[in-house]
Length: 517
Image 1 (cartoon, one colour):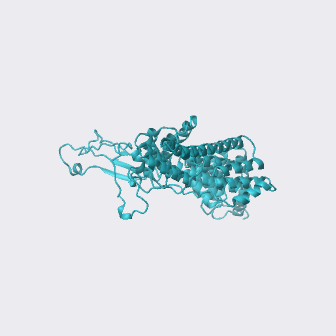
Image 2: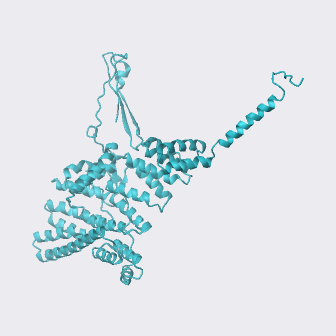
Image 3: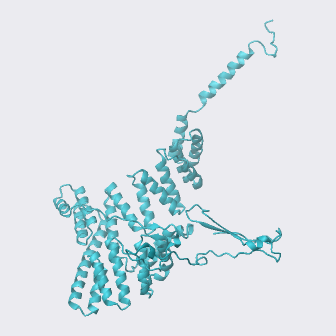
Protein backbone atom coordinates (compact mmCIF):
# COMPACT_ATOMS: atom_id res chain seq x y z
CA UNK A 1 0.00 0.00 0.00
CA UNK A 2 2.89 2.39 0.73
CA UNK A 3 4.01 2.22 -2.94
CA UNK A 4 0.55 2.45 -4.36
CA UNK A 5 0.33 4.98 -7.21
CA UNK A 6 -2.40 7.59 -7.48
CA UNK A 7 -4.80 7.66 -10.37
CA UNK A 8 -2.44 9.78 -12.54
CA UNK A 9 0.40 7.30 -12.18
CA UNK A 10 2.43 9.46 -9.80
CA UNK A 11 3.84 7.96 -6.63
CA UNK A 12 2.55 9.54 -3.45
CA UNK A 13 4.57 12.65 -2.59
CA UNK A 14 5.71 13.16 -6.23
CA UNK A 15 3.72 16.33 -6.68
CA UNK A 16 5.27 17.84 -3.59
CA UNK A 17 8.79 16.94 -4.70
CA UNK A 18 8.23 18.39 -8.17
CA UNK A 19 6.83 21.61 -6.75
CA UNK A 20 9.83 21.97 -4.49
CA UNK A 21 12.21 21.46 -7.45
CA UNK A 22 10.38 24.02 -9.63
CA UNK A 23 10.38 26.51 -6.80
CA UNK A 24 14.08 25.97 -6.18
CA UNK A 25 14.87 26.51 -9.88
CA UNK A 26 12.83 29.73 -9.88
CA UNK A 27 14.59 30.99 -6.77
CA UNK A 28 18.00 30.23 -8.27
CA UNK A 29 17.02 31.95 -11.54
CA UNK A 30 15.81 34.97 -9.62
CA UNK A 31 18.99 35.07 -7.59
CA UNK A 32 21.12 34.81 -10.75
CA UNK A 33 19.09 37.45 -12.66
CA UNK A 34 21.09 40.71 -12.74
CA UNK A 35 19.56 43.69 -11.00
CA UNK A 36 19.07 47.08 -12.65
CA UNK A 37 22.04 48.35 -10.68
CA UNK A 38 24.21 45.58 -12.07
CA UNK A 39 23.01 46.24 -15.64
CA UNK A 40 23.62 49.97 -15.38
CA UNK A 41 27.08 49.41 -13.88
CA UNK A 42 27.95 47.22 -16.88
CA UNK A 43 26.64 49.91 -19.28
CA UNK A 44 28.72 52.58 -17.59
CA UNK A 45 31.85 50.39 -17.87
CA UNK A 46 31.20 50.00 -21.61
CA UNK A 47 30.72 53.73 -22.02
CA UNK A 48 33.86 54.55 -20.05
CA UNK A 49 35.90 52.08 -22.10
CA UNK A 50 34.29 53.41 -25.32
CA UNK A 51 32.99 49.97 -26.23
CA UNK A 52 30.21 51.62 -28.19
CA UNK A 53 28.68 48.48 -29.72
CA UNK A 54 28.34 46.84 -26.31
CA UNK A 55 27.00 50.08 -24.87
CA UNK A 56 24.37 50.31 -27.63
CA UNK A 57 23.26 46.72 -26.93
CA UNK A 58 23.00 47.30 -23.19
CA UNK A 59 21.27 50.68 -23.52
CA UNK A 60 18.80 49.36 -26.11
CA UNK A 61 17.72 46.67 -23.66
CA UNK A 62 17.62 49.19 -20.84
CA UNK A 63 15.25 51.63 -22.61
CA UNK A 64 12.97 48.71 -23.49
CA UNK A 65 12.56 48.12 -19.75
CA UNK A 66 12.66 51.84 -18.86
CA UNK A 67 11.10 53.74 -21.80
CA UNK A 68 10.82 56.97 -19.79
CA UNK A 69 14.52 57.17 -18.90
CA UNK A 70 15.58 60.23 -20.91
CA UNK A 71 19.18 60.11 -19.71
CA UNK A 72 19.54 56.53 -20.99
CA UNK A 73 18.13 57.59 -24.37
CA UNK A 74 20.64 60.44 -24.52
CA UNK A 75 23.49 57.99 -23.86
CA UNK A 76 22.05 55.62 -26.44
CA UNK A 77 21.92 58.44 -28.99
CA UNK A 78 25.51 59.39 -28.18
CA UNK A 79 26.72 55.79 -28.56
CA UNK A 80 24.86 55.34 -31.85
CA UNK A 81 26.41 58.54 -33.14
CA UNK A 82 29.88 57.27 -32.25
CA UNK A 83 29.45 54.15 -34.40
CA UNK A 84 28.08 56.10 -37.35
CA UNK A 85 24.39 55.24 -36.97
CA UNK A 86 23.19 58.83 -37.21
CA UNK A 87 19.59 58.05 -38.20
CA UNK A 88 19.15 55.67 -35.25
CA UNK A 89 20.79 58.25 -32.96
CA UNK A 90 18.30 60.91 -34.06
CA UNK A 91 15.40 58.55 -33.44
CA UNK A 92 16.64 57.75 -29.93
CA UNK A 93 17.09 61.42 -29.07
CA UNK A 94 13.73 62.48 -30.47
CA UNK A 95 12.02 60.07 -28.09
CA UNK A 96 13.19 62.07 -25.07
CA UNK A 97 10.13 63.84 -23.67
CA UNK A 98 10.29 67.62 -23.45
CA UNK A 99 9.29 67.23 -19.79
CA UNK A 100 12.41 65.14 -19.09
CA UNK A 101 15.43 66.91 -17.53
CA UNK A 102 17.58 65.33 -20.26
CA UNK A 103 15.60 67.04 -23.05
CA UNK A 104 17.99 70.03 -23.48
CA UNK A 105 20.94 67.65 -23.85
CA UNK A 106 18.99 65.61 -26.40
CA UNK A 107 18.17 68.77 -28.36
CA UNK A 108 21.79 69.89 -28.33
CA UNK A 109 22.88 66.52 -29.71
CA UNK A 110 20.16 66.73 -32.37
CA UNK A 111 21.65 70.08 -33.31
CA UNK A 112 25.10 68.51 -33.61
CA UNK A 113 23.74 65.72 -35.80
CA UNK A 114 21.92 68.24 -38.01
CA UNK A 115 25.08 70.31 -38.39
CA UNK A 116 27.08 67.22 -39.33
CA UNK A 117 24.69 66.51 -42.20
CA UNK A 118 24.69 70.23 -43.16
CA UNK A 119 21.07 70.74 -42.19
CA UNK A 120 21.21 74.45 -41.40
CA UNK A 121 17.58 74.83 -40.35
CA UNK A 122 17.56 71.72 -38.16
CA UNK A 123 20.75 72.67 -36.34
CA UNK A 124 19.62 76.24 -35.69
CA UNK A 125 16.20 75.11 -34.49
CA UNK A 126 17.73 72.66 -32.00
CA UNK A 127 20.31 75.10 -30.60
CA UNK A 128 17.70 77.83 -30.17
CA UNK A 129 15.41 75.37 -28.38
CA UNK A 130 18.11 74.68 -25.80
CA UNK A 131 18.82 78.40 -25.32
CA UNK A 132 15.11 79.08 -24.81
CA UNK A 133 14.91 76.34 -22.17
CA UNK A 134 18.25 77.16 -20.52
CA UNK A 135 18.93 80.92 -20.78
CA UNK A 136 22.36 80.51 -19.21
CA UNK A 137 23.55 77.79 -21.60
CA UNK A 138 26.95 78.58 -23.14
CA UNK A 139 27.72 75.68 -25.48
CA UNK A 140 24.62 75.94 -27.73
CA UNK A 141 25.24 79.69 -28.06
CA UNK A 142 28.83 79.05 -29.11
CA UNK A 143 27.70 76.51 -31.70
CA UNK A 144 25.01 78.85 -32.98
CA UNK A 145 27.47 81.73 -33.29
CA UNK A 146 29.69 79.56 -35.50
CA UNK A 147 26.71 78.55 -37.64
CA UNK A 148 25.59 82.18 -38.01
CA UNK A 149 29.07 83.27 -39.07
CA UNK A 150 29.04 80.65 -41.81
CA UNK A 151 25.78 82.23 -43.03
CA UNK A 152 27.18 85.81 -42.80
CA UNK A 153 24.44 86.63 -40.27
CA UNK A 154 26.91 88.82 -38.46
CA UNK A 155 24.45 90.99 -36.57
CA UNK A 156 22.72 87.99 -34.98
CA UNK A 157 26.12 86.53 -34.11
CA UNK A 158 27.08 89.83 -32.45
CA UNK A 159 23.96 89.70 -30.26
CA UNK A 160 24.87 86.19 -29.10
CA UNK A 161 28.48 87.21 -28.48
CA UNK A 162 27.28 89.97 -26.16
CA UNK A 163 25.27 87.34 -24.28
CA UNK A 164 28.29 85.02 -24.11
CA UNK A 165 30.43 87.85 -22.79
CA UNK A 166 27.91 88.46 -20.02
CA UNK A 167 27.71 84.76 -19.17
CA UNK A 168 31.41 83.91 -19.25
CA UNK A 169 33.33 87.16 -18.85
CA UNK A 170 35.72 85.82 -21.49
CA UNK A 171 37.50 88.81 -23.03
CA UNK A 172 38.08 86.91 -26.28
CA UNK A 173 34.41 87.47 -27.07
CA UNK A 174 34.96 91.19 -26.58
CA UNK A 175 37.94 91.15 -28.95
CA UNK A 176 35.72 89.59 -31.61
CA UNK A 177 32.92 92.08 -30.93
CA UNK A 178 35.32 94.99 -31.29
CA UNK A 179 36.63 93.71 -34.60
CA UNK A 180 33.11 93.18 -35.93
CA UNK A 181 32.02 96.68 -34.92
CA UNK A 182 35.02 98.16 -36.71
CA UNK A 183 34.42 96.00 -39.79
CA UNK A 184 30.83 97.23 -40.20
CA UNK A 185 32.13 100.61 -41.35
CA UNK A 186 34.05 99.07 -44.24
CA UNK A 187 31.45 96.81 -45.88
CA UNK A 188 30.40 99.36 -48.51
CA UNK A 189 33.80 98.88 -50.16
CA UNK A 190 34.95 95.72 -51.87
CA UNK A 191 37.60 94.05 -49.78
CA UNK A 192 40.41 91.78 -50.79
CA UNK A 193 39.36 88.71 -48.82
CA UNK A 194 42.02 86.64 -50.56
CA UNK A 195 42.00 82.99 -49.53
CA UNK A 196 39.57 83.78 -46.72
CA UNK A 197 36.76 84.40 -49.23
CA UNK A 198 37.35 81.10 -50.98
CA UNK A 199 37.46 79.35 -47.61
CA UNK A 200 34.12 80.92 -46.65
CA UNK A 201 32.56 79.74 -49.91
CA UNK A 202 33.93 76.23 -49.32
CA UNK A 203 32.27 76.18 -45.89
CA UNK A 204 28.97 77.16 -47.51
CA UNK A 205 29.08 74.65 -50.35
CA UNK A 206 27.98 71.50 -48.43
CA UNK A 207 24.99 73.38 -46.99
CA UNK A 208 24.03 74.58 -50.47
CA UNK A 209 24.30 71.06 -51.86
CA UNK A 210 21.82 69.87 -49.24
CA UNK A 211 19.47 72.89 -49.61
CA UNK A 212 20.37 74.74 -52.83
CA UNK A 213 17.63 77.33 -52.39
CA UNK A 214 17.99 77.98 -48.68
CA UNK A 215 17.58 81.78 -48.64
CA UNK A 216 20.06 82.20 -45.79
CA UNK A 217 22.77 80.26 -47.60
CA UNK A 218 22.21 82.00 -50.92
CA UNK A 219 22.26 85.31 -49.07
CA UNK A 220 25.62 84.35 -47.56
CA UNK A 221 27.08 83.36 -50.92
CA UNK A 222 25.92 86.62 -52.47
CA UNK A 223 27.40 88.74 -49.68
CA UNK A 224 30.74 86.90 -49.80
CA UNK A 225 31.01 87.27 -53.57
CA UNK A 226 30.08 90.94 -53.27
CA UNK A 227 32.77 91.50 -50.64
CA UNK A 228 35.27 89.68 -52.86
CA UNK A 229 34.66 92.27 -55.60
CA UNK A 230 32.55 90.03 -57.84
CA UNK A 231 29.27 91.98 -58.21
CA UNK A 232 28.23 90.08 -61.32
CA UNK A 233 28.69 86.73 -59.56
CA UNK A 234 26.86 88.01 -56.48
CA UNK A 235 23.89 89.53 -58.29
CA UNK A 236 21.59 86.48 -58.66
CA UNK A 237 22.00 85.45 -55.02
CA UNK A 238 21.54 89.00 -53.74
CA UNK A 239 18.35 89.45 -55.76
CA UNK A 240 17.02 86.12 -54.49
CA UNK A 241 17.83 87.12 -50.91
CA UNK A 242 16.21 90.55 -51.36
CA UNK A 243 13.00 88.85 -52.46
CA UNK A 244 13.22 86.33 -49.62
CA UNK A 245 14.02 88.66 -46.72
CA UNK A 246 12.48 91.65 -45.06
CA UNK A 247 14.29 94.05 -42.76
CA UNK A 248 17.67 93.21 -44.29
CA UNK A 249 19.66 96.39 -45.09
CA UNK A 250 22.88 94.40 -45.60
CA UNK A 251 21.47 92.63 -48.65
CA UNK A 252 19.67 95.70 -50.00
CA UNK A 253 22.79 97.86 -49.76
CA UNK A 254 25.02 95.17 -51.29
CA UNK A 255 22.54 94.73 -54.15
CA UNK A 256 22.37 98.48 -54.76
CA UNK A 257 26.16 98.72 -54.74
CA UNK A 258 26.44 95.76 -57.11
CA UNK A 259 24.12 97.40 -59.65
CA UNK A 260 26.02 100.69 -59.35
CA UNK A 261 29.34 98.93 -59.90
CA UNK A 262 27.93 97.12 -62.92
CA UNK A 263 27.21 100.47 -64.56
CA UNK A 264 23.55 100.94 -63.64
CA UNK A 265 23.50 103.63 -60.94
CA UNK A 266 19.91 104.46 -61.85
CA UNK A 267 18.78 101.20 -60.29
CA UNK A 268 20.17 102.07 -56.86
CA UNK A 269 17.04 104.01 -55.86
CA UNK A 270 14.90 101.01 -56.85
CA UNK A 271 16.67 98.40 -54.73
CA UNK A 272 18.27 100.26 -51.81
CA UNK A 273 15.16 99.92 -49.63
CA UNK A 274 13.96 102.18 -46.81
CA UNK A 275 16.38 104.07 -44.59
CA UNK A 276 17.78 101.74 -41.87
CA UNK A 277 17.56 102.61 -38.18
CA UNK A 278 21.12 101.64 -37.24
CA UNK A 279 23.47 104.68 -37.46
CA UNK A 280 26.18 102.62 -39.17
CA UNK A 281 23.74 101.15 -41.71
CA UNK A 282 22.15 104.57 -42.25
CA UNK A 283 25.57 106.09 -42.99
CA UNK A 284 26.24 103.37 -45.53
CA UNK A 285 22.74 103.87 -47.01
CA UNK A 286 23.42 107.57 -47.67
CA UNK A 287 26.89 106.74 -48.96
CA UNK A 288 25.54 104.33 -51.60
CA UNK A 289 22.89 106.84 -52.66
CA UNK A 290 25.51 109.60 -52.85
CA UNK A 291 27.81 107.54 -55.08
CA UNK A 292 24.92 106.76 -57.42
CA UNK A 293 23.98 110.45 -57.60
CA UNK A 294 27.59 111.35 -58.33
CA UNK A 295 27.86 108.85 -61.19
CA UNK A 296 24.72 110.31 -62.74
CA UNK A 297 26.22 113.81 -62.71
CA UNK A 298 24.18 115.15 -59.80
CA UNK A 299 27.05 116.50 -57.73
CA UNK A 300 25.08 118.66 -55.32
CA UNK A 301 22.74 115.78 -54.47
CA UNK A 302 25.80 113.57 -53.95
CA UNK A 303 27.44 116.07 -51.58
CA UNK A 304 24.21 116.37 -49.59
CA UNK A 305 24.00 112.57 -49.27
CA UNK A 306 27.63 112.32 -48.10
CA UNK A 307 26.96 114.98 -45.45
CA UNK A 308 23.99 112.96 -44.19
CA UNK A 309 26.19 109.85 -44.02
CA UNK A 310 28.63 111.70 -41.74
CA UNK A 311 25.78 113.04 -39.63
CA UNK A 312 24.55 109.46 -39.11
CA UNK A 313 28.02 108.14 -38.18
CA UNK A 314 30.60 110.88 -37.45
CA UNK A 315 33.45 108.31 -37.45
CA UNK A 316 32.64 106.80 -40.86
CA UNK A 317 35.94 106.90 -42.73
CA UNK A 318 34.70 106.35 -46.28
CA UNK A 319 31.95 108.97 -45.94
CA UNK A 320 34.57 111.61 -45.03
CA UNK A 321 36.78 110.70 -47.97
CA UNK A 322 33.85 110.74 -50.42
CA UNK A 323 32.65 114.11 -49.19
CA UNK A 324 36.15 115.61 -49.20
CA UNK A 325 36.87 114.51 -52.76
CA UNK A 326 33.46 115.66 -53.99
CA UNK A 327 34.06 119.09 -52.46
CA UNK A 328 37.54 119.26 -54.03
CA UNK A 329 36.10 118.52 -57.48
CA UNK A 330 33.60 121.33 -56.87
CA UNK A 331 36.56 123.70 -56.13
CA UNK A 332 35.64 124.09 -52.45
CA UNK A 333 39.23 123.52 -51.40
CA UNK A 334 39.14 124.90 -47.86
CA UNK A 335 36.19 122.76 -46.76
CA UNK A 336 37.55 119.79 -48.69
CA UNK A 337 40.92 120.02 -46.91
CA UNK A 338 39.17 120.18 -43.53
CA UNK A 339 37.04 117.11 -44.26
CA UNK A 340 39.99 115.14 -45.68
CA UNK A 341 42.05 116.10 -42.63
CA UNK A 342 39.34 114.66 -40.39
CA UNK A 343 39.36 111.54 -42.56
CA UNK A 344 43.09 111.07 -41.98
CA UNK A 345 42.58 111.47 -38.23
CA UNK A 346 39.82 108.84 -38.32
CA UNK A 347 42.11 106.54 -40.29
CA UNK A 348 44.80 106.94 -37.65
CA UNK A 349 42.41 106.04 -34.84
CA UNK A 350 41.03 103.11 -36.85
CA UNK A 351 44.49 101.74 -37.62
CA UNK A 352 45.48 102.02 -33.96
CA UNK A 353 42.42 100.03 -32.92
CA UNK A 354 43.08 97.39 -35.60
CA UNK A 355 46.65 97.01 -34.34
CA UNK A 356 45.44 96.70 -30.74
CA UNK A 357 42.89 94.04 -31.72
CA UNK A 358 45.62 91.99 -33.40
CA UNK A 359 47.78 92.36 -30.30
CA UNK A 360 44.96 91.10 -28.07
CA UNK A 361 44.52 88.09 -30.36
CA UNK A 362 48.19 87.16 -30.10
CA UNK A 363 49.00 88.23 -26.54
CA UNK A 364 47.43 87.97 -23.11
CA UNK A 365 44.81 90.39 -21.81
CA UNK A 366 45.45 92.29 -18.58
CA UNK A 367 43.82 95.29 -16.95
CA UNK A 368 46.16 97.77 -18.67
CA UNK A 369 45.45 96.38 -22.13
CA UNK A 370 41.70 96.45 -21.40
CA UNK A 371 41.98 100.11 -20.43
CA UNK A 372 43.85 100.84 -23.67
CA UNK A 373 41.22 99.02 -25.74
CA UNK A 374 38.44 100.91 -24.00
CA UNK A 375 40.00 104.29 -24.77
CA UNK A 376 40.63 103.34 -28.43
CA UNK A 377 37.00 102.22 -28.81
CA UNK A 378 35.84 105.47 -27.24
CA UNK A 379 38.01 107.45 -29.68
CA UNK A 380 36.40 105.69 -32.64
CA UNK A 381 32.84 106.23 -31.44
CA UNK A 382 32.22 102.66 -30.24
CA UNK A 383 30.75 103.48 -26.82
CA UNK A 384 29.26 100.06 -26.01
CA UNK A 385 32.53 98.27 -26.69
CA UNK A 386 34.44 100.93 -24.71
CA UNK A 387 32.15 100.46 -21.70
CA UNK A 388 32.64 96.68 -21.86
CA UNK A 389 36.46 97.03 -21.99
CA UNK A 390 36.47 99.33 -18.96
CA UNK A 391 34.30 96.81 -17.11
CA UNK A 392 36.72 94.06 -18.12
CA UNK A 393 39.64 96.10 -16.70
CA UNK A 394 37.86 96.38 -13.35
CA UNK A 395 37.02 92.69 -13.39
CA UNK A 396 40.75 91.95 -13.69
CA UNK A 397 41.81 94.68 -11.27
CA UNK A 398 38.99 95.91 -9.00
CA UNK A 399 41.25 98.71 -7.68
CA UNK A 400 42.01 100.21 -11.10
CA UNK A 401 40.98 103.82 -10.47
CA UNK A 402 41.56 104.91 -14.06
CA UNK A 403 39.08 102.33 -15.34
CA UNK A 404 36.61 103.28 -12.61
CA UNK A 405 36.86 106.94 -13.59
CA UNK A 406 36.40 106.10 -17.28
CA UNK A 407 33.26 104.12 -16.50
CA UNK A 408 31.89 106.95 -14.37
CA UNK A 409 32.48 109.49 -17.16
CA UNK A 410 30.94 107.27 -19.81
CA UNK A 411 27.91 106.12 -17.86
CA UNK A 412 25.98 102.90 -18.59
CA UNK A 413 25.92 102.10 -22.33
CA UNK A 414 23.96 99.19 -23.75
CA UNK A 415 24.83 97.53 -27.08
CA UNK A 416 22.77 98.71 -30.00
CA UNK A 417 19.58 96.60 -30.21
CA UNK A 418 19.61 94.22 -33.15
CA UNK A 419 16.55 93.36 -35.22
CA UNK A 420 17.58 90.46 -37.47
CA UNK A 421 16.13 90.08 -40.96
CA UNK A 422 13.21 87.71 -41.37
CA UNK A 423 12.14 85.34 -44.11
CA UNK A 424 9.12 86.43 -46.07
CA UNK A 425 6.20 84.00 -46.11
CA UNK A 426 6.38 83.95 -49.89
CA UNK A 427 9.63 84.49 -51.75
CA UNK A 428 7.88 86.11 -54.74
CA UNK A 429 6.16 88.69 -52.58
CA UNK A 430 8.51 91.54 -53.52
CA UNK A 431 10.38 92.44 -56.67
CA UNK A 432 13.74 93.98 -55.71
CA UNK A 433 13.60 96.15 -58.84
CA UNK A 434 10.41 97.87 -57.68
CA UNK A 435 11.06 101.33 -56.20
CA UNK A 436 10.69 101.41 -52.40
CA UNK A 437 7.48 102.96 -51.09
CA UNK A 438 8.34 106.29 -49.38
CA UNK A 439 7.71 106.52 -45.64
CA UNK A 440 4.17 107.76 -45.03
CA UNK A 441 2.74 106.53 -48.33
CA UNK A 442 -0.85 105.32 -47.75
CA UNK A 443 -1.49 101.61 -48.02
CA UNK A 444 -3.65 101.97 -51.14
CA UNK A 445 -0.65 103.41 -53.00
CA UNK A 446 1.38 100.21 -52.63
CA UNK A 447 1.81 98.28 -55.85
CA UNK A 448 0.48 94.74 -55.68
CA UNK A 449 2.60 91.61 -56.14
CA UNK A 450 3.98 90.87 -59.57
CA UNK A 451 5.02 87.49 -60.88
CA UNK A 452 7.76 86.43 -63.24
CA UNK A 453 8.41 83.10 -64.91
CA UNK A 454 11.66 81.89 -63.35
CA UNK A 455 11.03 78.16 -63.64
CA UNK A 456 13.84 77.43 -66.09
CA UNK A 457 16.31 79.66 -64.26
CA UNK A 458 15.56 77.76 -61.03
CA UNK A 459 16.04 74.37 -62.69
CA UNK A 460 12.32 73.58 -62.81
CA UNK A 461 12.49 72.14 -66.34
CA UNK A 462 9.75 69.64 -67.21
CA UNK A 463 8.16 68.61 -70.50
CA UNK A 464 4.64 67.23 -70.30
CA UNK A 465 3.78 64.37 -72.67
CA UNK A 466 0.07 63.66 -72.79
CA UNK A 467 0.69 60.40 -74.68
CA UNK A 468 -2.31 61.04 -76.94
CA UNK A 469 -2.42 58.95 -80.11
CA UNK A 470 -5.33 60.55 -81.95
CA UNK A 471 -8.08 58.75 -80.06
CA UNK A 472 -8.68 61.75 -77.75
CA UNK A 473 -9.56 59.95 -74.58
CA UNK A 474 -10.85 62.31 -71.90
CA UNK A 475 -7.52 62.01 -70.01
CA UNK A 476 -5.73 63.28 -73.14
CA UNK A 477 -7.64 66.55 -72.99
CA UNK A 478 -7.27 67.18 -69.25
CA UNK A 479 -3.49 67.61 -69.08
CA UNK A 480 -1.18 66.48 -66.31
CA UNK A 481 -1.12 67.42 -62.66
CA UNK A 482 1.09 69.13 -60.10
CA UNK A 483 1.42 68.51 -56.38
CA UNK A 484 2.95 71.01 -53.94
CA UNK A 485 4.19 69.21 -50.83
CA UNK A 486 7.04 69.59 -48.37
CA UNK A 487 8.57 66.23 -49.39
CA UNK A 488 11.91 66.58 -47.57
CA UNK A 489 10.38 68.32 -44.52
CA UNK A 490 12.63 71.39 -44.79
CA UNK A 491 9.86 73.97 -44.54
CA UNK A 492 9.77 74.72 -48.29
CA UNK A 493 7.26 73.39 -50.78
CA UNK A 494 8.61 70.85 -53.28
CA UNK A 495 7.02 70.31 -56.69
CA UNK A 496 5.79 66.96 -58.04
CA UNK A 497 4.86 67.03 -61.74
CA UNK A 498 2.86 64.22 -63.31
CA UNK A 499 3.19 63.04 -66.91
CA UNK A 500 0.61 61.44 -69.17
CA UNK A 501 0.73 58.09 -70.97
CA UNK A 502 -0.71 56.42 -74.06
CA UNK A 503 -4.18 54.92 -73.60
CA UNK A 504 -4.88 52.12 -73.34
CA UNK A 505 -1.80 51.53 -71.18
CA UNK A 506 0.88 49.53 -72.97
CA UNK A 507 3.21 47.71 -70.58
CA UNK A 508 5.80 47.39 -73.36
CA UNK A 509 5.98 51.18 -73.78
CA UNK A 510 5.94 52.80 -70.33
CA UNK A 511 4.91 56.44 -70.02
CA UNK A 512 7.31 59.34 -69.60
CA UNK A 513 8.45 59.65 -65.98
CA UNK A 514 6.98 61.94 -63.36
CA UNK A 515 9.41 64.36 -61.70
CA UNK A 516 9.98 65.56 -58.14
CA UNK A 517 11.76 68.91 -57.75
